Amino acid sequence: MKHLIIGAGPSGVIAAETLRKLQPEASVTIVGDEPEPPYSRMALPYLLIGKIGEEGTYLRKDAGHFDGLRIDVRRDRVTGVDTAARKVQLAGGGALPYDRLLIATGSRPVSPPIPGMDLSGIYPCWTLADARHIARGAVPGAKVVLMGAGFIGCIILEALAKRGVDLTVVEMADRMVPRMMDNIAGNLIKKWCEAKGVHVHTSAKVVAIEPGTGGRQFAVRLDSGTVLAADLIISATGVRSNVEFLQGSDIRIDHGILIDRQMRTSNPDVYAAGDVAQGLDFSTGEYSVQAIQPTAADHGQLAARNMAGRREAIHRGSVNMNVLDTLGLISSSFGLWMGAKDGDSAELCDPGRYRYLNLQFEDDVLVGATSLGLTEHVGVLRGLIQTRTRLRGWKERLQEDPTRVMEAYLGSTQAVGFNAGLI
Image 1 (cartoon, rainbow, N blue to C red):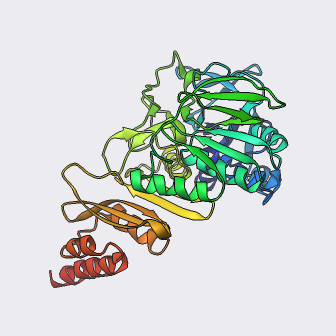
Image 2: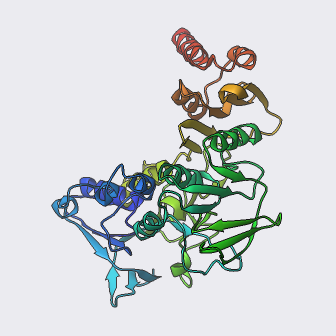
Image 3: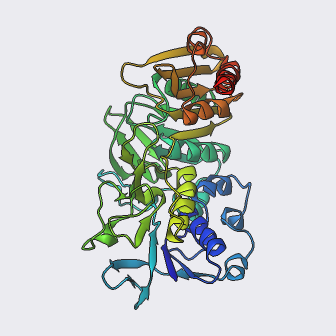
């Protein structure tokens, strides 16, 4: 059996290792299009602040790890997939055959259509090469403009602030981390960052980037008329699934590659996982792209099991979850944090201490949660959401005091166990 994996990120690596365990005699090949060993993009901020070296970003630290598992890691770019012939074309020439193919090509940064975005000195923070450029420019006192205050942007924000730069953040939405935090929490994060010396513009749009004056490399124009001087610009304005090389194939694509609950695409011999896959959302029942590392890891393992013939490996849906550390302020959101239609909620807010907790209910089930500055029992929130535990009388008590989450968990689960014992 020839297993071929396109993509050397977490999904691809976990899938390859899982396949090796399940089918010791199979051929397992990973094709990655970057010159470095497989690495984690989420580790790049730690590289920027000097907590780790480049080797610390590698997904597997042992240089002989893949050779020891007889996993062939090739550095090339796939330009097309011929599902009829079961082979992929390579940019370096030639083709690779497969019996089962996993597409784990991830996503790439989206560059907004702004005049001047093609100027030298503007980078995403997406690859090791990007991180090297940023490290050279983000020196103490340098004026840096960060475009985008989403999840990725806020991770980069912390690394930049710790490097001692003069940092300005520009976000189009009315709050920071708008796809993770509601208005109250997102603006408390903004207030926190400003108190730490970061300049933050929300409800603001960059309309042009021009050559700078007075020794600065750039002049960044906002729609308000404000002009920001900058030595370095970092764009964190969103990502898009890498699917272009599939044009002309029979693999169905929407926002990402459409997959079923066994991670299969529209072609039964081709699977997809991670940021490129449009899979089942646990909370909504819809199919969407969830570009977060926990989902990528789960996808990779499930895809490998199905590629190896373990058809009982059913995808039960990815739970939307994000945990973020922004200059020491911990925030998290799970499930339908924005609320369910006709649902109820509970809220606790102490803005002076940067404390916030919001719970969202559908009937007597917790379906979403947002927390800020409260790290205790955050795992319990996720557990209640993922198990769809019926809270019974605890919903009303949580609406009175949302911090009683652990009591609600113990009370609800013990009640279920007790009742089950009576049946």
